[in-house]
Amino acid sequence: MGNGPLTGYKVLDLTQFEAGTVCTETLAWLGAEVWKVERPVVGEQARYTFEEPGKDGYGFIILNMNKKSITCNMKTPEGLALIKKLIAEADVMIENMGPGSIERLGLGYDVAKEINPKIIYTQIKGFGMDGPYADYPAYNPVAVAMGGLAAVNGYPDGLPTQCGMDIADSGAGYMAALSILAAIIQAEREGIGQRIEVTLQDTVICFGRALWEPYYNSGKKQPQRVGNGMALENVAPCNMYKCYPFGDTDYVQIYCSRRRGSSNFADLCRVMGREDMIDDPRFATPTSRYEYREELDAAISEWTAKYDKFTVMDMLCKADVPAGAVLDCNDITNDEYLLKRGTMLEVEHKDRGKVRVPGFAPRMSENHVEYKVSPGLGEHNEEIYGGLLGLSAKELEELKEKKVI
Image 1 (tube, helix red, strand yellow):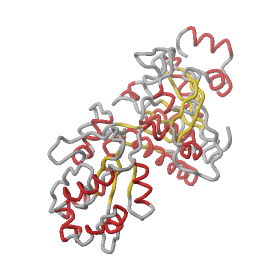
Image 2 (cartoon, helix red, strand yellow):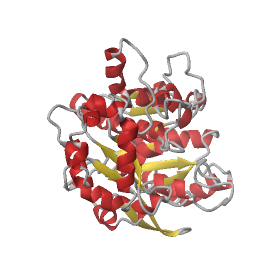
Image 3 (cartoon, one colour):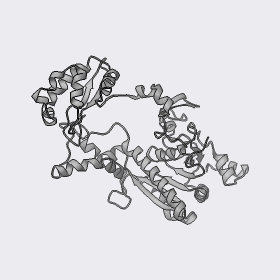
Image 4 (cartoon, helix red, strand yellow):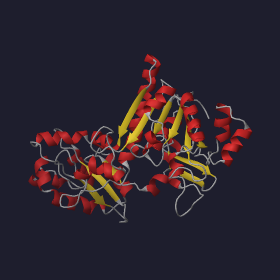
């Protein structure tokens, strides 16, 4: 599969759904050998859907590439013993079960540390495990609300609004991966393991750190919801503008900086053929442009409606005016440059055939790990239990008959 920065490191993956699986997939794409532990027969909770039981769901395919799947019923004494043997062999262990679940299984940090003092034991939770919400269930929408994002997302006269992407889940996964990399370096330097705790709420709060600038500048007033504007400052033009042929995502985002000396607005006017607006007193300063933003938006919308979103973006960006077409999943999936770059990947799956999915975002010149489709349920039982732990074929068959694996 090729070598990467983490080739040789072993990760015991007890995760499910998104936050944990994003973390372990990231480690796998960097070369780590990831042992994904799933329930016998039914797999992890996100492998199969209610509509298609027994057939890998697209969500599972997207979040579990380059991993090795093993099955284990950790609620049995034999299953628990297997996991403990794997802890002894692993460099990293990660879980994102519900509050208290891993401890009830008898696999808390103290237990893992006694087995392997150098283990990097990672937990992803909704809220701080030492706080008042420690036992509260949490999913991405809850963390978006509790992390401050919903309060600033939406329109001024509307409800606090959820984000269309799983910022809390995926963000926590990447935060955990980042922390694990740092812990690996520390382990090599100092010979120690450690416990890492990442929460969805903490992650969203950290992503919103810039909000505290307007919060303090306004005398501790809550930053307002500004729709498609800029939450940090009053800027115009800064909005979504409709483009031909007027479909659901036929829009372009245009942003003109209000910084001193910026020529964005004047350049926009020239591209539009509206040089008269440059000298219009209503649009003479950033403050006045924001005051008359409705009139400004109307003029811009009249112009963008003549062209498709890609043409508008190209015309403006070539004039050094910040603009971006609104790309939907179809646009991104069929972008040949993104496929060539590796931002999108095409994999062959046993159930789904050829599928294009998002890949690993960074480009690293010395990461030579090849992408591999997500594993079948228990596909690597013999390799890990037999090859690594030394169980015989007879022992494996007995464990299978007992439904331990």
